[in-house]
Amino acid sequence: MRTNIVIDDKLLEQAMHVSGLTTKKDVVNKALSEFVQRHTRKDLRELQGKIQFTDDYDYKIMRKRC
Image (cartoon, rainbow, N blue to C red; front, side, top):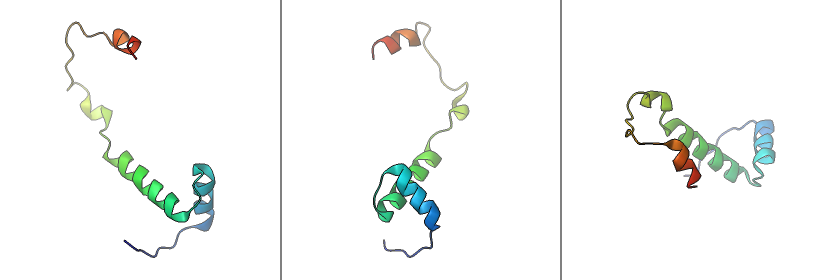
């Protein structure tokens, strides 16, 4: 979708520098993608008390497998 918007030039320049991306389009697409990911990610605090682990669950053993 083609859209015309006014973007702060200094902010866009900083985003291009920090991200290493070379086009305005790539920077805007990356920013939108990260925004959507961040805001759709489940808040871990909402899961508190809702996850049941088996009695023999040992996270230390699970970490050693990786």
